[in-house]
Length: 222
Image (cartoon, rainbow, N blue to C red; front, side):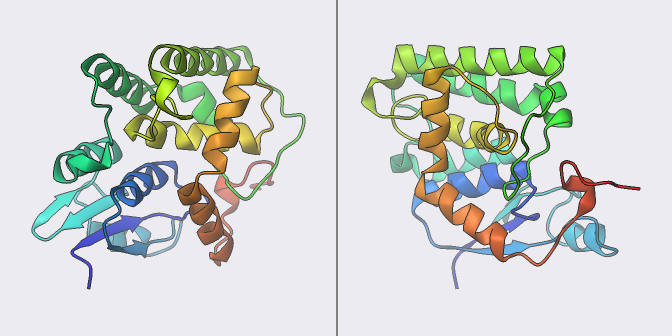
């Protein structure tokens, strides 16, 4: 039995779960996972068995429970320093943490208009001004990180990092809603979608038996 367990919501829909799971995969450590589907009669009861906040993901490491995505990344960065979840360079690390915190707390118009639904493709989605502002800011973040710190690889700060974990759900949204992006941003989306862990996550979502209309774009919710 693995020492580490991560408790997730549906892989098809849970942006926060994706973030923590990607970081855990990046460590190379063995782990077990538990998936609790959302919008079920016993969802909250089941989540509270693992997460005191009633939200997911939750990382369990023996007596330690970490129940928030960015905190999970920080915990894993300390536990597995060789995983490189934050850049080694001080300036790059500072910016990576800043943009991770920005996407953690911000971009509400985009998140509300474009839910994460990794198995769907939506064409000709109308983009409101507030959502377009979010898209432009995200592209500026990516452009700046790649220009200043991306020489060492294809990800935001060169090597795959916690910042990439935090932006992974945004990448998925851009893919789902077929968002037109500048060339460099489109290349980054393609790079992230081809990452082996992203491919594995989507394959896991395809195997899930749950279809939840509340989280499906374009589905009539009655």
